[in-house]
Structure formats: C-alpha cells, structure tokens
Image (tube, rainbow, N blue to C red; front, side, top):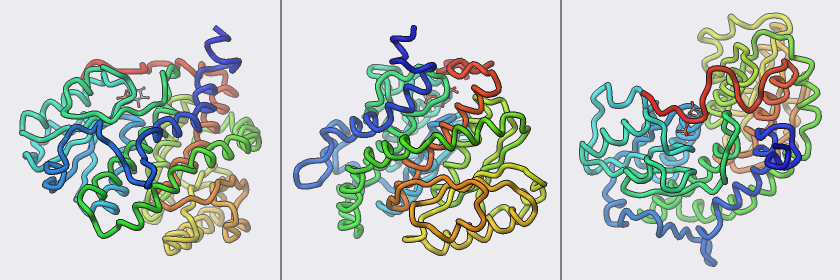
Length: 372
Ligand code: G6P
C-alpha cells in the first residue's frame, strides 16, 4: 500500500531515501568514545583474527560488488591478502582454504543458496566464516562462526540499494577492526577513517538533495539501447553496480569497465551519442588515477560519447569534458562508493520508470534466490 511505501511511488524510492539513516544505524554502537571500534558481536577471538593469513569474500549480485570494494579496504588497512569471488564459482574450483583463512560471506537476505553453499564448503575445510547480513536469524548467519549485521531495515524492492550501502559500511568496519586488532602500521589512518565514516551519512543526505538533474537526464535517455560505465580503483565496482542496476531495472544493455582497460577493447564500442557514465576518483589522494581518468573522458568524448561524469565537488579538471556533470561530496578515496553509488541508483530507477517498467518487481528476478 501507499502507507507502506511511506508516501513514495515505489519501495525502491523509499529505500534510496532511507540510506543516510541506514548508514548511520549500521555505525551506531560500534564506535566508542575514544574513536576505536567495538565489534564485540564478532565472536571470533582477537587471537584467532591475528593469525588469519588470507581473506576470501564470497557473495552474489550487488553484495558481490560490496565484496569487490571490501578487497581494496581490507588489503589497504590490514595488509592481509584478500580475494573476492562470486559465490556460485567458489566451491567448484577447489579453492585453497585452511584454518588461517577468514571467509566473509555477504548477503542481504541471508538465504542466497549460492552463498550458503560457498560458506558450507569453507567451513568444511576448517576456515572461519564471518557473515555480513541484513536479516536477523536467517540461514547464512546461523551457519557462520560470527555475524556483523547491517542495520538497513527490511529491504523490499528487488534491486538492492540501502542494503548495499550498509554492506559497504560493514566491510569498512571489518577491515578497520582487523587493522585495529592486528595493530597494523596504518593506526593513525584507521582512526581518521573512523572519524570520516561518522560524517558520511550527512554526505549521502546531501547527494540525495541534488538528484533532480540526474532524473531529468535519465528521462532523456529512455530510448537508448546501451549505457556504458567506467571507473577505476573502488570506482570500478561502482561502475559494475551502476550497470547491474540498469540491467535489472531498465532492461537495457549496460556494461561496467575498469577505465584502464578501455584501450584494450571497450573503446571500440564508443560511437556517436553513446551515453558513458564515468566515476571519477578524487583529485586529492590518488591523483595519478584521477588524471588518467580525465584522459579517458577526453578520449571517449573525442570519439563522440555523451559523457556523464560523476566527480567530487571542486574537481574542475573534468568540467571541459563533461556533457553532464554530477557532483558528489569529497570523501576519502576508499569511502567514495558510499556517495558515488547513489546517483547511479536514482538514474536506473528513473530510467526504468520512464520505460514503463515495474521498478520494485523487475521481470524474471527474485529478491532472494534460494536455489543454486
Ligand atoms: C538476487 C537479487 C539481487 C541480490 C542477490 C544477492 O539476485 O535480485 O539484488 O544482490 O540476489 O542477494 P543477497 O540477499 O545474498 O544479498
């Protein structure tokens, strides 16, 4: 009913709007007064966590994209090698697992069969499994050694939005917690990131307040057949997520590419007026990547692409090459997906509506897939 949707036309719109609160709720009670993490709920003793020598993240769909971003955060903040793998591929390739491996299973529903079978396989090999899950008492957390719940609240729309943002928060918390427990050399940076995380909910709120031009743009693209997405570093999984949302909701051909790979193939796809969404890393921090992506934008625009550029406030270098410019607040590099994903969700939702599609219940999809 309309009341259940809180006055919004679709659950997806309501859930997009709930993201600042979902993010804040997922941090709540997990940072103490001194700015350290208190994840007592992760019932794997610090002694065991100090001995972990490899981390493997398994998940499906949108949760897999959260896992890809987790890899960047985990390796940077903990220096523990981390792999991320589609849950449906994992157990069939005889992966190398032992008691020193920590497997992180990410699932909104906690019922996805592919993810469940992957974690069962990991536990059979003696690995510890930590679930990141949004559904209390569901199967995946029940079968794991520990669970860190995301506090997104119930997510009804099939296409995941607020659960994804809270999965990112949970992944950052796990990475920072491992860094804290193991006392890595990034101690000061970790404390600073914990402070930045505390203000990120406000940044998400600000993005939501500036989405009208994105909706307008989406409506003008309703008759297109293809949209491409480019990003690099943590912007690469964001590009994949933007493309997945368009496939799920707008039933359009959409692909995400790592921007550095453009020259190795995808650039052949660029043609006159093809919409290409580019997620631009911060010009601060890893500025080399920023400059390379600006060159990519120039290259595709010179070949006729219609560039839709998502860039930090104050990033002036992109302005001459952006046919459409979407501004996001400045954040530390690794946290950018929390703000950069939001315009892509709004974009896909509006395109789907403009194409007359059922936003909350896309054809052929289910909210949770309980078969392998
Ligand atoms: C289904 C949904 C996706 C979701 C995926 C993983 O395919 O349609 O939106 O990302 O399952 O779901 P989970 O509940 O494990 O996060």
